[in-house]
Image 1 (cartoon, rainbow, N blue to C red):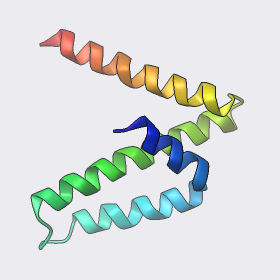
Image 2: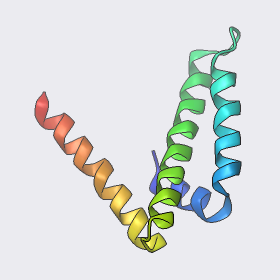
Image 3: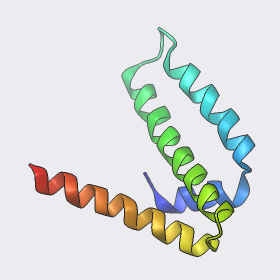
Image 4: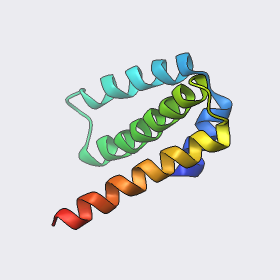
Length: 87
């Protein structure tokens, strides 16, 4: 997941566009002939799209775009910190 990519997706795509793309990528991953490397790339794109959708929801809920991106980044970093301390 890359915050700059999430920012670009948020700024340049509507939630409807992101959801449509998400559906296509999920369907692509289910094809039998798709390699593991292709699934990994699609998975990274899916993660970024989901991040952008979450930022859209935060903005819809009243946050400023910059605050929504920062809150999302902090949430992810907090999740990473928790998972690394569990090991």
